[in-house]
Image 1 (cartoon, rainbow, N blue to C red):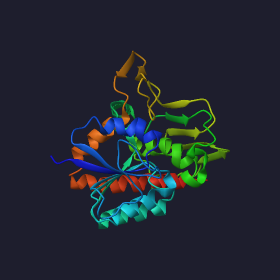
Image 2 (image 1 turned 135 degrees about the vertical axis):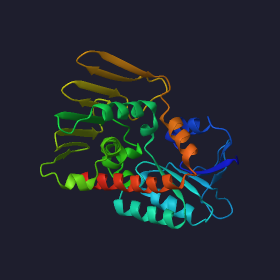
Image 3 (image 1 turned 90 degrees about the vertical axis):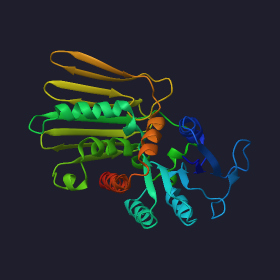
Image 4 (image 1 turned 135 degrees about the horizontal axis):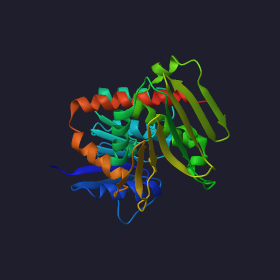
Length: 309
């Protein structure tokens, strides 16, 4: 196994606190370049731009969403890149996302969008529980809310020019989860006549019903912290707390109740990014998986665009 050398676009708190510690848990991983506005760093080589001489096979994108496509196109032009892992959302436009997918296909590059939560054992368990009890002929409810308290005025998430708006920064989580759990895409949604989509300030609420399953999705800033999903049927209730963002000391649980009993599942390791990289490194050479990733990225981008106001 050769050393995986990474070039990283962006070197902010998120990368340092979440991504880098997860990468360090794997052997033969090396951060070769940091492409950043910083002038220097005692631990890493800082470069202003990637080119044929300094580029690596692996790229990680951790810059604001609005410049992801610029970073990715620069990396592709070096003709050395084989793998690009990008923070979600890949871009702030379904057309830009489609363009990047086509470029990666043309250059045989594996493109990976880091919806890290869906690789954590908590999500995988929830998916299995729902799969076992979901019945399209019975009344059910799926609720998902991701809201965070007031953020610093200088935080990039307050700048829609950098993010594309709340829907790309945090709304992408509740939106993506309905695809990852139920394979709901824009084609299924177009058949629904009564979709409520309400945006007020930096908060958004979506309500719709597919067959007998009701969906309630919400997200926003400057609200009480909520990070949960609830799936409820006549006989069962599943509650997953801290489903998306997880802090290192978080206690990760699932509550599963039915008419006969109550169960609680606990997960000791809250590191979403560790499980994401573990999955990625195990399947990166799978050619079929490469095309599944292209499809998945495009489907989620179309969903986000569908709900965008």
